[in-house]
Amino acid sequence: MWRRAAMAVLALAALMPRAALAHPHEWIDMRSAPVFDAAGHVVALHQEWLFDDYYGQLSLPDFDANGNKVLDHDELMTLARENLANLKDYDYFTEVTVNGAKTAFAGVGDIDSRLEKGRVFLSFTLNLGKGIDPRGSSVSYRIFDPSYYIAMLHQKTEPVRIDRAGCDYAINRPKPDAVWVTLAQGLDRNATAPDDLGRNFAETVTVTCR
Amino acid sequence: MMADFILAIQDWQRVFHDRIAFDLRALHEGGSWAAFLTLAGAGFVYGILHAAGPGHGKMVVGAYMMADDRTLKRGLTIVGLSALMQALVAIVLVLVVFYGLGLARDKAEYAAAWLECASYGLIGLVGTVLVVRGLRAFDGHVHDEHCGHAHGPDARALAQVHDFRTMAMMVLSIGIRPCSGALLLMFFACLLGEVWAGMGAVLAMGVGTGITTGVIAVAAAHSRRGILKLAGASDRVLARVGGVLSILCGAAIITFAALFIQAAWPSAPQSAYQHPLMGRR
Image (cartoon, rainbow over all chains, first blue to last red; front, side, top):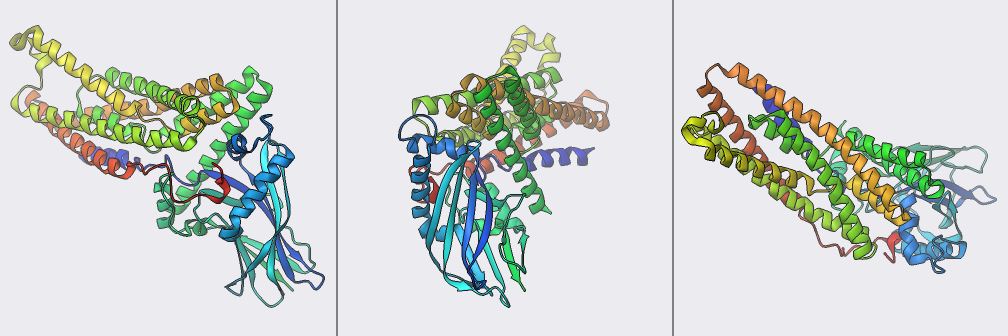
């Protein structure tokens, strides 16, 4: 009985750790597609980000220029351009590696944004510094918010599109080390995340071509 | 294993976020009672599930029921009142921040973090009261209420005032800390201008929280009874064992309150780190 009592107190205590203000705070559902040139080299990464419901509502006060309580196309485009300009310093939350080495980027194009059932949708093409021949080399990429303020995961349906014959992809779900997970749980909303917290929660997409 | 568990909780959190966003939007666009009931239902279920998770005064209520030889009714009153207060605090906090300070979820959560600290401080006080009571069991004052002939009605009244104070302190300590889910729901409701629906759903959430915490209170009361029955027959022994339990539980509560105050101490809302996707916010 005493043991059970002790267990009860311990269990109650163990339930206390605060998940209350834990990261992440927002979510993005993604789709991505490597862009191939005529020679079959990967030259860019097309990305589609569908923000959660809160993002659009929270952006409304700052970006609803005409005050009609809806983000119109031009307002969404302003938001998109500002976001992508800010994201430049963060490598667009993207990491492309060839045989383990990081690839440099050459800016973004094809920026578009609209509302999908009230949620902000953003799409853009991230150009690679130089094309990658996917045959014979291991090409993979990760898209994540390093601070893990936002959780970014691929959508369940058609997560990755591959427009090249003989190529396939695999998504490796994150297997975060328990320490990192616990850290994220304990992070205060306002606390500064340690560098690269989000990496531990990132999916890795690997592209293989024959 | 632990990682999977926490990731699963995060998935649930996501499901809840999506659920209330979806329901609130449906309500906003349709405005039907059915939409409100769906939202309130989601809040209720969240309250039940979330209260089984971290916080929500389970530890305080559980330890109180274990430590204190009071009626279950009293424990359940504390549970009910604190769940109600928790819901009201969430509602008022978001309303004040939203309409008083101008839209800012950061500010609401910063204020909530301070309330959380205050909550732990009050919980620490409850722990102190339990320890003091436990110590009293050793100099024979524990059964004040049962030996009325010695102390007269004044002592009984005094004990009642004491009880009322402890109960009020517990309700305050648990209820002052709003739950993050309630804040989020209320906040999104305010964003969409569905303030009344938000209030209703937060109160439904409070009912759910109260049910779970109530179950835990009942369980704790029963395990206490079991312990005491096992401990022996005589009133003297019973009082002593009760006293020890009270001291142990009180000390545990004080320790955890101190630890959590330290962990919960809020950092300033202006973070050096500006998120690239929250540029103007």
